[in-house]
Image (tube, rainbow, N blue to C red; front, side, top):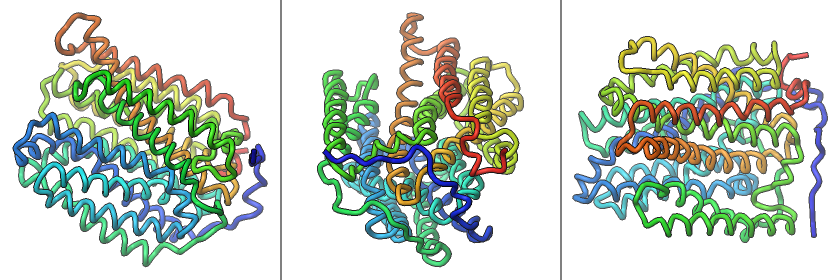
Length: 482
């Protein structure tokens, strides 16, 4: 049985690397961030347009959820292969092709005459999206020194936070003034500009990565595991399929996970490299960060529901209030580096994580009589803390990863990230449904939303003690912290 050993600590990167010119670093970061923003926005803007799509196709709106599920499953299935593909064909080339595939998929979505064609086009979009996130992150990490990682990662944090916030109101606005097909058409000019920008402004940085043949059997097991787990999470409690099929999906996913784990122990270069968990900073970033992402993933589901169904706000009013979270995330960009320089990664992840969880809990106190400005103020602060937490997690995860292992690290990290965000929606929905069931009501009341917010806040705060297991000097090579 072949096993690879990774050192627990890598050599001091600052003695081995030189900084990329700031202008090139910012250009690369902005191009990658815009492409990821397009992907994140598309993932959420579509849900608002589903009723209009159903009317256009003359079908029950309930069946339209397959257009969302097919994209998420395709995304999850293909993400594990992204690192090997980037090593084999070059990160810049793969990232550019991923943007083109995603854009072509958007074109076919916009002209789809029926649900079957739409689902096929969404799968094509998922293939492109699966390569964009991890390969875009890899491309950025290979283009900067470790000392520049914090600054670069702040750009990648914002798309993940802005997309879920801007998507629903933008989708509602587009459907109100034009055809639902424009929801997909807006991706086309962004995709074309992105592909050209990658060719013109991003250098083709190549580094030694994983060699050898593609771990085909591992890709089969990991893809099957992700597809079945995602299918189970997308259908649980929604009445889309019988409960038996949901349970069967979870059981099949668990079985595929076990089969992959046994397979990965026997091959030299598995498609998902669990040996990376021997690196302390990567392990803690993944475990603690997953808990935090589960909590944050529930908020774009819970908050609009409470504002619209619980408070009687219109979709536009709800969108304008939740936009404050995005404003807080943008404000964080200038503060991330100074805070990490001053306090270090460990202290920021502990105390900022606790503050982020507290702001999530504060949303449980929202009431219909609250002024919109006050709710916006709370959400602005919450967006700041969440964005800082994500920046810290996303940066320190790669702080001690050797350059040749970077593609494997981005692949594993992105796969777990995708799974945890989906688990967040399930956690939010389950908390709300259980609170409603316990109270004996047919539909959620305000108190049920409050219970759900408190539950996800407790999940978020669990990341703080896990972050406390970091050494006090963790990530110091990435900042000026002493």
